[in-house]
Image 1 (spheres, rainbow, N blue to C red):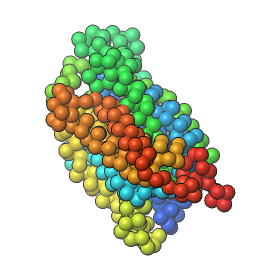
Image 2 (cartoon, rainbow, N blue to C red):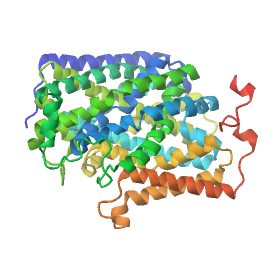
Image 3 (spheres, helix red, strand yellow):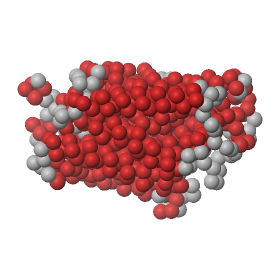
Image 4 (tube, helix red, strand yellow):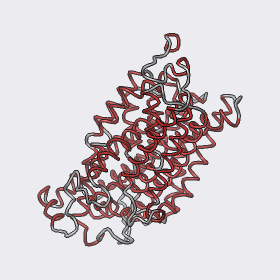
Length: 512
């Protein structure tokens, strides 16, 4: 179909949003004087701002595009990414794990792992996280290009370049504080735009009854209304959803994701950090509907035009095509603004966090142990630009390799989230896990994930292994190997572990 011509009211809405976000970001950059200001906002962030930033760090352009595409393919099972994979893990992170990061005074999750285990574990996870975040930046660029190609007729690289410039303007100068407060605006716009899509779409297909009737009439949607599909489901069998998502990917994401944890570490106090998680969990209750329902509406409205999801089918076109058919002038501008909110909030979150990881976990410990604060600040700002360019270069291979950007993002996570969660759990809950056990467990978990992700070519398994099973078995492998090696190696002494293991509180002078 031809690209749309935005009406003046749509253009005005989009420009108003872009100008407000960039202006706020640049204004907040005035107080950045130290690396602590840049990476942790000087620990001055209020709980409500952090909570809203957590929402849009998790839910961005890749999720709006990707979840809609996968909801078109698989149905209501996609709601479990919030129901099973978010609400409980967020509360677990708030009341059990976050206090240890806070007490330890760390900037990053790998920094905590380095203190609990050793520098080898810290460096390996830091490198893995940087590669993951750069690839995630690439998926966000693909999301932007997919939307703008359908709606505005923009070529792929023009959309990517515009996104790089827009987010780079304030993230390079403003650091975490600029990121969080621009995310507040983005969260409001994102929820408003997603709600408009759902309301107008349900009305167009004849209400919920009309939606269900239209989808049920298709001959390939047998499991679309199952929250937990049967065990023979190709991608989301219910045991894999419960174990892989509920027990591994969800908790690992909210407990060990640097982009998430870094926001709470910038809060004014432990209590405010905890409150931000709870506030985020409350807002997230509406997102299973806001993200999944558009894909179901597109299936009911556009199944003939979008086709059956097989072969070279492109799920990244589902949401853009729906918007093109559904939204009137004025509303279209608001929704494009919401999508831009998702792009900018996701990009600034991952770019800032990856920059923090490189400076804190690689540059300072291994390259320049005596780096001054100003050197770290300058490097952090330069890295923002480098990471944006790196993500842009990865965007095209990601576009051609994966059916949807959400599939790409989840696949990237499965390479390391299982072993990451294993080391965090064993490290925080038992003093017996040793540095060599952690290093061996990390290696075993990552190796298991690599093999299972390549199961079709390496093991000859037709169709490969569902990525949720990959997450589960890599976690199991990491737990077993960490425990086995720890039984025959010597743990750190008790003083080293104080404040890092929940049974060993920090000394009073260390907590004041």
